[in-house]
Amino acid sequence: MSNLPNCPECGSAYTYEDGSLLVCPECAHEWSAEAEAQNEEVKVFKDANGNVLNDGDTVTVIKDLKVKGAQSALKQGTKVKNIRLVDGDHDIDCKIDGFGPMKLKSEFVKKI
Image (cartoon, rainbow, N blue to C red; front, side, top):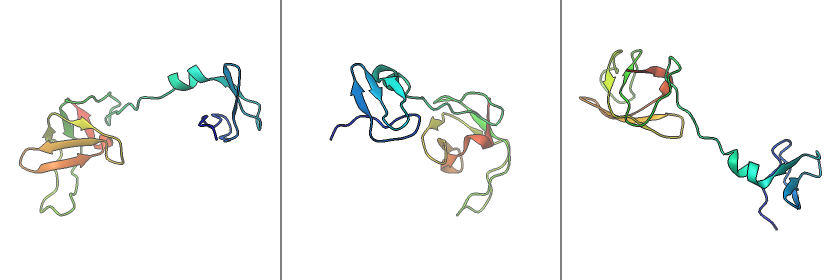
């Protein structure tokens, strides 16, 4: 069994090579293998205002966030330095002074 990618149009697993092109027999879609490799998307993380976030940025929390297992909430305006962007349901991995390690969603922060 070959390890060709599924069809990007219909998702069919029955693709085959025809010269330098990949072909789907179910929907007749044709595409090049080089274009398949170039189409890998890099996820862009944005804050609540639509600004692009990068590793090492400093952000502030835009609303009070309840933290499971903590005595108090994370207050609006809390500054978070040196963030790390990760894949998953929480986009930001950070350490907050006086609070400890935390995972935040990018929709609840704004870039400074």
